[in-house]
Amino acid sequence: MGEHTNDTPLDERDAKHLRHAIRLSAEARQRGNAPYGAVVVGADGIVLAEARNTGAETDDFTAHAEMNALRLLGGRHPRELLAGATVYASGEPCAMCAGAIFWSGIGRVVFALDIEGQQRTGKPPEIALSCRQILGAAPRRIEVVGPCLAQEAARPYQGMWSGR
Image (tube, rainbow, N blue to C red):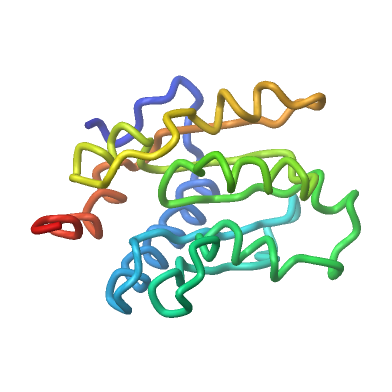
């Protein structure tokens, strides 16, 4: 797994916010949840929301980091602002989260560890559609960048699913 395997360069700002999402994923793991973090950033660079996975803490199977961050946005920001926003996710958004990103109106996703990389850590299988496939079927363009910083993002996964 390379540090950055996408053809699109990862600039300083993207790397900063993606590393923030990766730190949130480590916090989620420390709290007994699956290791996922997400940060939503406006086009002006201001963090609009951040969250980590809280599924184990809340016994809510929809409490993925992206879903939690999107819930924090609800009704607080105009759609025009969200259209220019980016979701930074420590792991490639699943089918549910990708759908929610579409419905939020957010225009860009940058993720670290892709679904295949997550599964190489021992993560149980899930619906095998990449967020790029799902968002590529949207009636509006949503830019997807990733995987990026995959080795950094994989660290919180180590040993997570052993013994299950």
